[in-house]
Length: 95
Image (cartoon, rainbow, N blue to C red; front, side, top):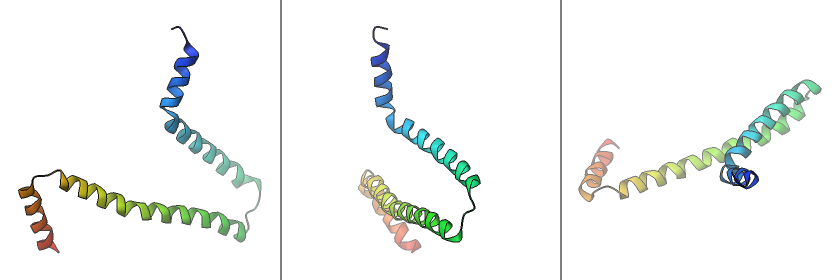
């Protein structure tokens, strides 16, 4: 290997999202364990943290339906016309 630093840099660039995700999980777990034991949480403190978590979950729920619909439309558009027609008739019959 001529340049191990360059190879390492290339590996980090290629896997940056995975590495940042793993680092985020580790930091989150460490912060959660540390902050749980450092002080007594009041109801107001819990409400502020719960609010951010609720917003995050609502955003995830809002993303799920468009992703599923776009995946279904994409999958059906790649099928034959006769096959998609029979699938459509079955779907309408079920409804």
